[in-house]
Length: 274
Image 1 (cartoon, one colour):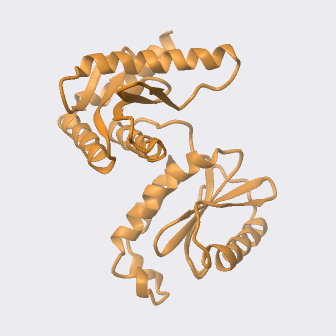
Image 2 (cartoon, helix red, strand yellow):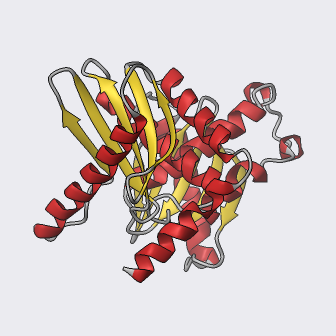
Image 3 (cartoon, rainbow, N blue to C red):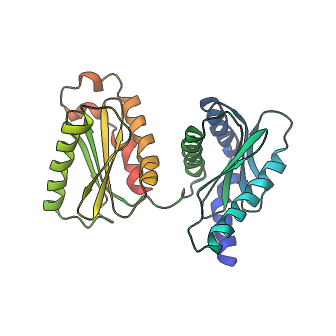
């Protein structure tokens, strides 16, 4: 209990920083504008207290915050009793609306959303986890499990390498294996991803999995071991979008000169540090 309380205090210590409530409010507002059907959202701490809210209508933020913690804790107990890892996303189906909860920061923070029954739950799940990640970043705390990404390749759809990142603190790949993996990734991109539309894909390379995240002009290939594909996707997709937004005027007609991407590291280094 003492360790849990220490984590809670550390996770929420940034709440008192000037402007943090406004920043969290903007994150929730952006989430509502991007995702149709949302009636309101709250961020709650591990005791069910409201940290920030964005509510449309007469629903009390305090009530939703208390519900958020109760739902998350109840879900965790159910899975614990059947000796399984607890859920990171919980949806409750109601007659008039649905309630969805994402818990993070070792259970010390949760995001609850009240949403219309007609809402696309697949989109909601993706956007809620993305929003939770932004909340964690704003608070300076960890979101979920570490991504465990050891190598990250940024490649054009023609298979040309733009940038390679390596987490030398975590990777156990030697240079020969890495070179072979890069060749395999480039060929996979040229022969498969560049010629057909589709969702995220992955490539097995020995005991490693290369997860692909596709942008409009580029593809990120993230190398991870024993990691869930969703965790990798959430860590990489925002960074790739940031990169393509920053260099939208260069990428469509890029000449191959990597110096045109000054500042690229600001987009991707955070992925390996997650």
